[in-house]
Length: 133
Image (cartoon, rainbow, N blue to C red; front, side, top):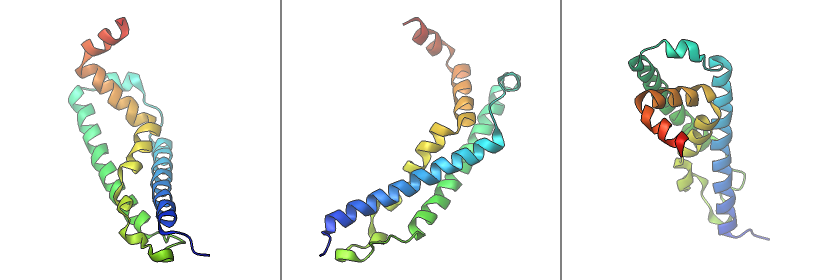
C-alpha cells in the first residue's frame, strides 16, 4: 500500500517544524543555564546604551544560531523521503527558521527580561498607561 503524496508532505512539514522547535527549545535552555536569571540590581546600574549593545550582540548570535539550526534541519534525513515521489529537500518549510526563534524568545527568560527592562526604560509612559487601564 502506498501512502498518498499529500500525507507524506504533511508528515515532512511536521517533521521539519518539530526539529526547529526542539532545537530552539534546547538552545534556549542551554543558554539559560549559562546566563542564569537576570540580576535586576546589576541591570539597573547599567546605562541604556550598554543594554542595547548587549541585546544587539545577542540578536546577532541568534542569527548565527538560526543559520546553524537551518543547516542541521536540512541534513537530518526524513524517513519517508522518496516515498510517493516526495522530495524532502524541496520542502519550503525547511526554510522556516522563525520556528527556531519562537522558543528562543519564549523560553530564554534572561533575554526576555533584558528586552522588557529596555522597553520600560525607553517607553516608561506605556507601562503607566497600561497599568491604569
